[in-house]
Length: 118
Image 1 (cartoon, rainbow, N blue to C red):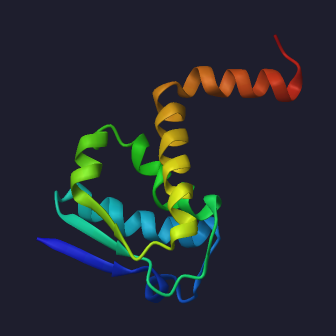
Image 2 (cartoon, helix red, strand yellow):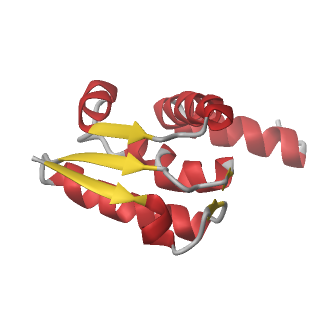
């Protein structure tokens, strides 16, 4: 069984830009995937999308140890993604995989570069 979610109806705007809206999407996706139900995210009508939204909506799925990349690829489908935004998805997924695979090292290196600690 697949659940289909029209993003524009869920977030009540055609601008997919805020972390809060992304978290709304994440909550629904996470709930369905946890029940082993496939989900389709339909981006029809979305005219603007940011990585902040996508990090919240999609990126944090990679922090769930129950969801392998293969599981997500099989059970999370995207449709009607504007051509100019397709690269954003790839970038968000790649960064999320890198971040959650090496979270401790990533945070230490980020703190070192931001605050000058060695």
